[in-house]
Amino acid sequence: MFEAKGYQKVEFEQNPDIFIINTCSVTDNADKKCKKIVKEAKKISPNSYVTIIGCYAQLKPQEISEIEGVDAVLGAAEKFRLLELLDGFAKTQETKVLASEIQEANIFNNAFSIHDRTRTFLKVQDGCNYGCAFCTIPLARGKSRSDSIENILKSAREIAQTEVKEVVLTGVNIGDFGIREGKRQERFSDLVFALDEVEGIERFRISSIEPNLLTNEVIEFVSRSRRFVPHFHIPLQSGSNTILRAMGRRYLRELYEDRVDKIKTLMPHCCIGVDVIVGFPGETDELFLETYNFLNELDISYLHVFTYSERANTRAVEMDGIVPIKKRNERSKMLRILSEKKRRKFYEENLGKTFTVLFEEDVEDGKMHGFTENYIRVAAKYDPLLVNELKTVTLTSINEKGNVEVVEPELVYESHT
Image 1: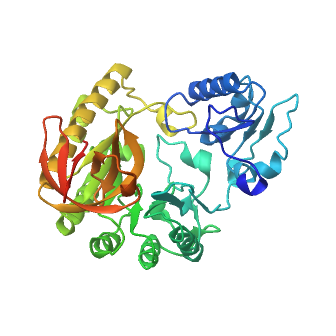
Image 2: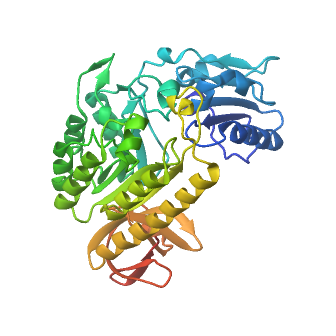
């Protein structure tokens, strides 16, 4: 939208006239991070116009407006009208606060990332109707709502006209896809079936999807799909049914185990990532060990570990059984170590097999990187001709650094754990 109006995107440190800072409410210390970035922005460009958008802006607009250097704060409904509402970006004496009640955020705004040469993120759903006890996202993003399959296919075909090889489907609760104007009109499985027919895109990757919404129908389709890759990221949050009930999750560990078993039966090489929260109120040592042992036995590939932190206006902050911060951090460390073990085991299971790597313009220490279809990260000596190319490689061995060496005729690569 900015480019259509004649604006030019520059890097943060290139003395911008306007900063648009997008905030999150999921990570810790959103207020401290926001203040720090505003301070950095004003140091780089003292006369710049600073606008804050995103989840934190919706939840605490007045608090943000009091940060020195902030010119405007836009809520969830307003951020998509940013250029209209802040026309000309003229400074005023008072900070502009444009954040309506979250009920006003009821329109789906189509979006996909551009200028990412190898991978594009395509938004298909927004908002969430779930009320998990620890989460502020429904308060920050509103009710679940989606684009239509017809519009998404149109966007996918536009993306296919570029050089992009991989599309990642994103949303707040992607498995709940299909709700428009408060009513279910389509299903996530219908979207997956339709996208698989889009010519010109080599890979589709599904981002995080709730276990109760990941159906057998979708798993079975991905197992025989032409374009959807064997990689699922499925939030668990806890391996204890007691904690899952307290969290208000919509499944128990038995269902989660069933989802993993189904995937691995059909796609033994499939990568499965897991979100887990440690230190939720009421999580005793025994209940944490339930989670640890459950994950240890589960055939998964890696973990994203989150240390529970209190969020205003959530049910969890009223709960008894607060876990000391020190204990939360200890549990987090234990699961991160387990994650590394799981990743290594997953790599070992795939040695000797052949995959395709999509190389990216991601260079570190003279090496470029890319991912196999089942999410193994590969590094190779930088070669500009390999950028945005799919190359067939064979995983051969794990070296002393825990990296996987892979072989492609006349080239030797490494895959980092």
